[in-house]
Structures are given as C-alpha cells and as structure tokens.
Image (cartoon, rainbow, N blue to C red; front, top):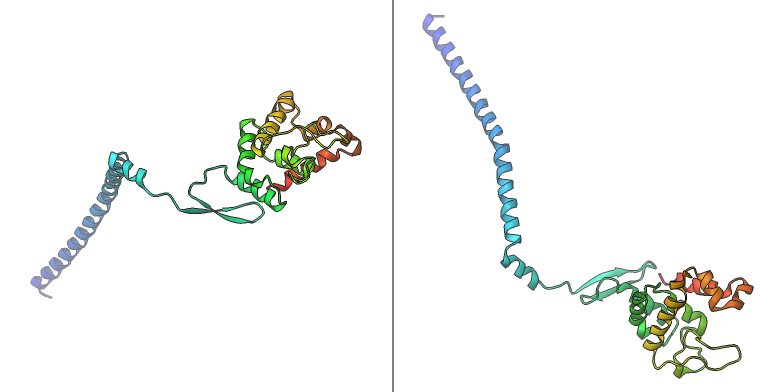
Length: 222
C-alpha cells in the first residue's frame, strides 16, 4: 500500500468518526434542550387555561351552559329511578319516603316532601314520622276519624274514637315533628326505647312492642 492510499484511508475513517460524534452530539444537545422546553410550554399552557377560566367570557359560558336533563339514582334496595334536573341533593329521601308510603297505600304519600322538610326543620330522623304513622294508624289508613288527620294517635286514649284534630296532613306532620323535638329530643330522649317508654308505656310490659314496631318500619326505609 502506498503512502497516499494509507493517508487517504485514514482521512476517510477520521471524517466518518467525526461525523458520527457530531451526530451524537447534536442528538444529545436536542435531548437536553427538549426537557426545559417542554416544561416551559406546559407552564404557558396552564397559565393560558387558568386565565381563560377566570375570564368573564368563560364564566358567562358556564352560567349559560344547560343542565343535564336527567341522572340515575339507585336506592340501596336496587330500585333505579330517573330524576329530573330540578331534583336537588337530599331529595332522594323524599323518594324513599314516598315509595315506602305508596307501597303501603298510605294517603300520606303525596306529602313525603313535607315529612322530610319538617324532619329537617326540627332536626329529627326523617324516617321516624312515617315509621310512627305505620304503627299508630297504618300510615293514616286506620284513624278514629278520617277528617282529623291524626296519623300518630295523638290524644287517642283507650276506648275513645277521637283524639287531637288537625286540618290537613301538612299541619299534622308539622305538629308531630315539633312534638317529637320538644318533648323527646330536647329532653335527651333520642333512643327509640326511651321514646317508646313514654309514648306508649304499656308496650314496655310487652317487650317494647311499640319500639320494636317503629324500629322495624324505620329500618325498612332504606
């Protein structure tokens, strides 16, 4: 091999090697620059999105956005019901009470919302009123007088065919809710056995039959 050939071959190898290292250097430089550039673009995007979300235009669009027409509510028992968009949080309790009362063919069923509302107003268990109603009058179906709306058996003593009279279901529901609050809850009688001992004293001698009755219906409202 001549000196010229030797030099030429080495020159080609050197050039190839330099090109290889140059390519690797460029790739490494690109890779190093990619991370801060990506982070920088991410910060810019987040800033732009935050600024737009807080802008009056975006808030106006959100305010005018249509509400969902319906959503699915599944009760613990597995019964599904479709609710309209006007239903608010907590209304599932009204559905539970109404379903319970309709199941027992109670005339109080249309006033399930009043039962929940009055229970909330006086901070009592929303299931207590319909449970007592079931034990006292089969939820308004077996009262001494139909036009007294006395579903809880207030002042209906043994042997009498009348008691306290109310003008309507809403009035009787409100009265009973306040009665439970003032005469029981406010005095520390929250446990059903304590309430039963005062509400129906003879039931204590029969193994708290009144309490057991109320509790069974109360537990059925789920």
